[in-house]
Image 1: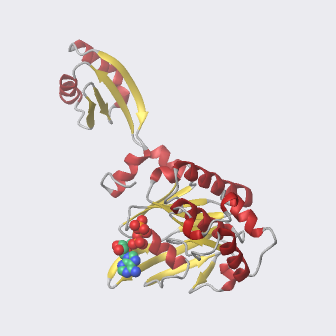
Image 2: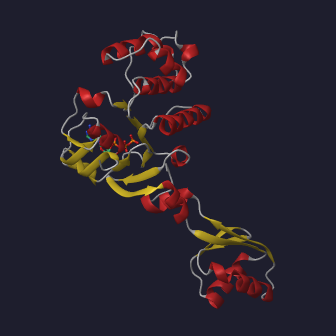
Image 3: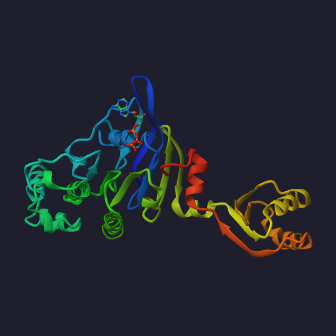
Length: 307
Ligand code: ATP
């Protein structure tokens, strides 16, 4: 046993010759939450569909539960719960009736299976409403209820927070954390919103234009953020000249009318401070901080939107 519930080797998908997923090597550890993070069109859904045998890979291998698959049969489908794109339900049936049908199809259910699943996603009070009367957020919750109902070992969730309000996002996050920590469920989740998963994931895979750029422990990413010293000064232009001419510092940025951030020679901040004062630049504050996780991601995938 490798310890990875999902593993892929050079997994690739081309649609009409255009690459959507490009030789990715995923390692999703057992009992952890793994978030696949990427902008719209990065290849997240396609990767998940290949794992779920909804799309045939163009190349590469998939191992689920340590076994190579070329399409999974009933045995694995009991072990996996998923949300992929908009979950499909009968419009004219209630949430409870929809889940009841699914539970029967899956064949393994106890009397309280449906009620427990609805309760877990806080839909128990809405179970009499028809599916077509549900809001987008309620539909997403019902999708999650359907995915977790048979208590699978592995959850594959494609953007499960889409359409949820902030409370819904928080509840879903707490529920997934609880499933993972208490039941040991392995969760493979995709998102294009860093904030959604930065308080949830143990491991993050960053995908961009079909390529897996990084696969790292979230804690390690937090450690890697860039350190900087921020000076609050009376004259930023004069201060910038001192940084460049006296200290040879070029890796800095002006972050406000009275503030600038330097990313190099942070440990010389005492000397820099003295030089500023000598040049008649008043220094109100010096803070040493670490950059935001967002900056790390945008540095990797480029641009400033989405993640
Ligand atoms: P989003 O967050 O917008 O859902 P994603 O990261 O899930 O994006 P995919 O849906 O996997 O990305 O799409 C990856 C690329 O593959 C995109 O360029 C998309 O246009 C293309 N693609 C996806 N499905 C198909 C398809 N059935 N036929 C042709 N191209 C497709």
